Amino acid sequence: MWQYLLKRLILFIPTIFLVSVVTFFLSKMAPGDPVAAHFKDGYTELDYELEANRRGLNKPSFYFSIQTAAYPDTLFKILNPEKRKTVEYLIGQNGNSETVQAYYKSLIHFRKLAMQVDTPAAFSNFLEKQSKAIFFARSEKEILEQQKIIGQRLEENSNASLLTGLKKMELAHDQMKNSKTLSRHYIPNFTWHGFNNQYHHWISNFLIGDFGTTDKTGRAVSERIKTSVFYTFMINIVAVFLAFGIAIPLGVKAATKEGERFDKITTILLYGFYSLPSFWVATLLILFFCSPEYGMNIFPSIGIGGDATNRSFFAVFSDRAYHLMLPIFCVTYPSLAFIYRQMRGSMVQELKKNYVRTARSKGLPERQVIWGHAFKNALFPIITMIASVVPALITGAVVIEVVFNIPGMGKLMVDSISEQNWLIVYTIMMMGTFFTILGILIADLLYAWLDPRIRF
Image (cartoon, rainbow, N blue to C red; front, side, top):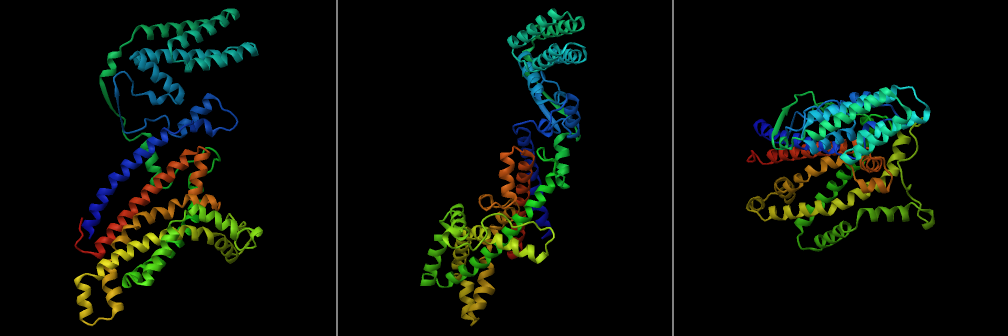
């Protein structure tokens, strides 16, 4: 058994690694600048650099990089993503990273001069705007236009230090333009960065439960997830027990009465429920059972009830249970038909096998034949569903949580997408992957426990 478990773990570890790599790089490609979003009332370049360094963005993205010889292995040190894209574009156009970096340094030097010089307010604002804009100029025409605008204004104000800085910038640009080596784009270059990289720190923190800090509220992601996962888990664990507790006995009963009235009626009713969209049923339940206009104001409409402060445990529990009854029903009923179908079909097959006929011929009670012999062997399709049940306990039922305004993981995911709070989105995505693999592992172990012949 332990050897079997070790084999499964060896298979799952690469899967988790590959999914985590994909998730990490998707998070890097998410729209927006997380560092800029951190600041609510504006920021200086120094503030930006300090926050980017705190987040570890001054490190390479992964353990290694594969690119052409035209690109240096230090581009990650340009912290502003738009400036980095500009430098990458210029290298792509010229193929000579040395002259592009020299040009970039001349821009930094000119901007420092523009920020230090003592000039009138109007001219200072002009320098601030133009010295920043030229960082993002990419095409040669756009760069020359920016240099011309700055040069004309500097000649009007006769500032020697700034004119010298502009001349250095123009010279660096000419050198970059006249030293193109596009052939370097055809030479591959492999660089090993080591373990001090963004992905390694991200996955290490994830494994210890440190998911970072949200940009919008400043709260730790783990705090927001901890609050949301409680309600999601409560809804889904109750729904799972109800769905399996109802559907399995019904499936076994229907299999023993195959083709009879009980079998037909149960099948029609459950498939009728299964055909109803959960969001539509949830809306109808709110409309007819939570609205005084229809005379059936039985349940509260949405939410989880009042604040738990200064209230007893039993008062809070009854309030929460009262609010969660309808959401639990909406999560439970779609699963009944599917579990019932799997249980019934598997049980029908088992009851037709020779060992069941042998047990009956020995005079064993029918209850023992069904539950003691056939039921255990009919559980394999049900065990397969554990792989989907485990992540559902954590990731939540998105539609139901949104309709009933339950602050669970599903609603947190939707809210985070609308807020472009991608750190939370990809954390939930990674958690869903981890618990999916955990569910598959549990299902495999249960397979091996039920059938000793399974050893791979």
